[in-house]
Length: 88
Image 1 (cartoon, rainbow, N blue to C red):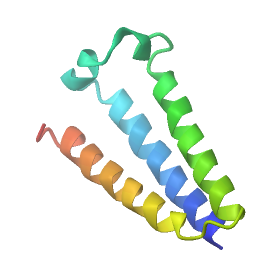
Image 2 (image 1 turned 90 degrees about the horizontal axis):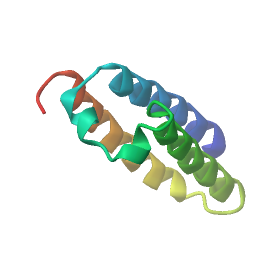
Image 3 (image 1 turned 45 degrees about the vertical axis):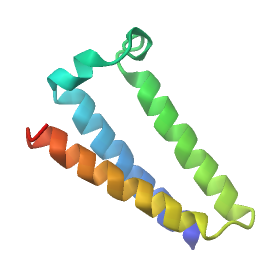
Image 4 (image 1 turned 60 degrees about the vertical axis):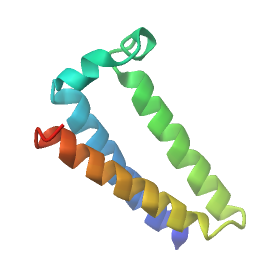
């Protein structure tokens, strides 16, 4: 059950991440050069690796990691809201 919960949170994280990448926010221009190599897709790969690691760890006996991933998602929600609303 926790794996499904993390997967659903991961889908939301990808959606927020993609929205921030497509926003054209000036903050994105301040990222290091290697982030821009693949049009920002390297950050999506990193997001996938975090999701994969969380799902694998939960599936292999670390169910409390779901709470850590929920906290990570909450931080993503807050940062995406700040960037997309123009507060940053």
